[in-house]
Length: 118
Ligand code: SF4
Ligand code: SF4
Image (cartoon, rainbow, N blue to C red; front, top):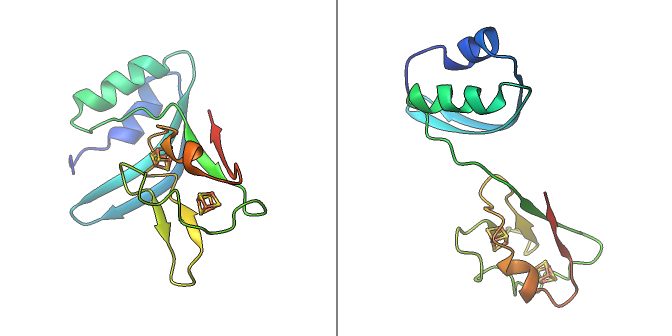
């Protein structure tokens, strides 16, 4: 929580396009998955960091192919950031806002249902 209009200033002052892919914000703070493009993207990211927002670049995440997945759960305990969960209906889901793209789960999957997305 930085109490500044950081995103507005970013768009006003830098040649960037800014796309919010996911947001989980509450009165105490939150997380956003954002895509920043444009000729000044790197400068824009530096600006966000200097404004006090923690930035964790995500180079890749994984996606699960629902048709191939048999919900065996083999990938769940492998994930170091607990991005793969068993839902109430016993299906397995990958939370791509938590995934850091380490690829460990792809090696555990017997049906090759998990693919890396750059
Ligand atoms: S790639 Fe790594 S972080 Fe992402 S879901 Fe698989 S094990 Fe978890
Ligand atoms: S290991 Fe593969 S088949 Fe098993 S739950 Fe994970 S994605 Fe689905």
